Structure formats: C-alpha cells, structure tokens
Figure 1 (cartoon, helix red, strand yellow):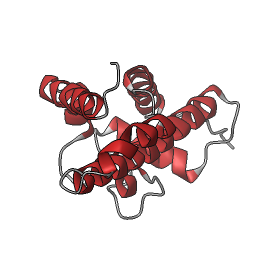
Figure 2 (cartoon, rainbow, N blue to C red):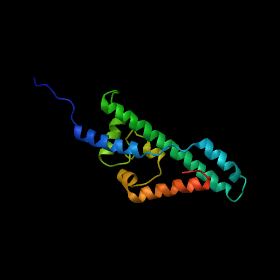
Figure 3 (cartoon, helix red, strand yellow):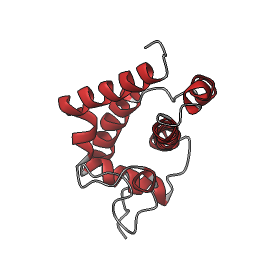
Figure 4 (cartoon, one colour):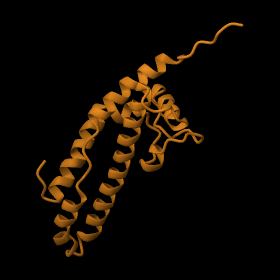
Length: 153
C-alpha cells in the first residue's frame, strides 16, 4: 500500500495569499455612517438635493457591506491558510476565485458572497484591484462624497 501525500495545490494557495495580502492592504476603511448622516441632515431639507443625498448614503452603506464582507472573508482565509481554521468550502471557493482572477461569487455554485454585494460587472478582479483607472475612479468617488458631505479627506 502506498501512502498518499497531502498539501497539493500549494501554487494556488501561494497565489491566493499574495492577492489576499494585496487586497487587505488596499481595502479602504469603511465610511462612518453616523458622521455622514449628521452631515446629510441639512442637505436632506433641500428638495432638489435630497434624492441625490439619499442615493449617496445608500451607496455608502452598500460599499460598507461589501468592504466588511471582503475584509471578514480575507481574514478568515488568512487564518485558514495558516492552519488556524479548517478550510471550509467557502474558503476553497475564495482561493479558487483569487487564483483565476475571478470576482469571488461569480460562479453560480460558489459559496462566496462578494458578487451578491458588489455592483454587477463582467470585469476581472485584477481590473478592480490594480487598474490605475479604477484607482483614479475610486479616488474621485471618495473625494466627491467627501466634498458633497463637507468631510476632510
């Protein structure tokens, strides 16, 4: 009888770890909704601006949900790759998605929830994370929201 060896798939794990570390370093902090709601009170009185303010607040909440899930699942995956947690099906799906440059959860059988919380797009994960255009767009959106609510950047 020959013994089996474990630990296959180290290449995908290492690639996923590299992408995971990069993502965790690049994830922005969540919006502080209490401050945004306080700043929005005066703007909500203006009937012309109020619908735009409501949409901006909803988008900030939606972004917080996505960022929170991304942060939680990446930290959980880090612990799983270090051996501190058992690798669940969700973590395996996340490793697979990261290693093939796919937005986690795009596969209909995946247990990851990033796609459900994100805006619908066919762009790859690489485009969202590393594209200079995306970085500029992200900065523009954060500056616009900051200016809209009179926040300091």
